[in-house]
Length: 419
Ligand SMILES: [Ca+2]
Image (cartoon, rainbow, N blue to C red; front, side, top):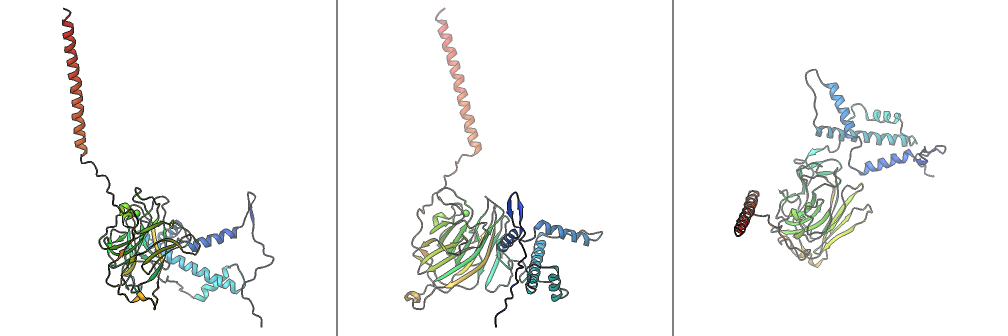
């Protein structure tokens, strides 16, 4: 028996609406598909914020009593909008199913009515994971700190606001020796030229320690993959930002923000991963003491090697995490997914070596590593400089006056000779 296709058939007589604007063909449906695809890729809201706020304000004004004025916090509006959009998208999805069931491609008001009837009265779709502040969230094996917020689609370490610090840390130590970590992330914000500061993927001994290195503690023990979006120092290093680099620390090295960590980095590469419409991924592979960092930021669904460093020794039993900060400049730093793959082979001869108590170390560092100090500022204060200039000018005036007096006396003597 032949299988009957359930897909809705296109009406043969149906013609696509084609408008002509200044001689060019313009198909409205194409723009709609483009908009849908753009919205599916982005993390932005479908409804413009101002329009949504206007509706909320109108409702609040209708609800207010004679004596009290109702007010609402911006975070509450954000939560309302998140919930409203989840509800509406669900309603549209179900209505599209109804239309497909009726072998139509156009959704009609009847489809919405049918969906609402099936769902029954009091239908309120609660988002699976409403936005909640970072600390105290129950996601198995993960802990959050600082400004981190969790939504159904992403974990936001920092939002596009000044002076934010956020972090996520896994609570299970990595006990495999060879591994690959893949992180799906998104760094985006309103700033076109000014933005910062970036985020770090950690493989570290200590977890949940707030500090100055992109929200984590300095003099850490472990590996840091730094995705630095802001160039603090344009001097000795010649690379552009955003820049991805690796640092291995045994607890004695200081990460120098002012120099973007250039004198402690193992290697690095430029990577324009910010404000992209498509998905951005990074892979950190640690296999047989070789650290390889690759990116997938060109929408090609393929890894591109950023750098590779040999002779990196990392202990087992450290924790995975990510942290981000904003300062005067800001960005949204979002983590969509974190996946860890075990690469240990059962017949690997080095597999039996106990690596739980070694210190992290790296054989090769990127030259030059010399720490060049900034020229020391002059020890003379403004007042001292002013006094010196004053004394100098008095000396010059005194010299001129003495010179004139000497000249006049000389002239007098000259004139006397003629009497
Ligand atoms: Ca920086």
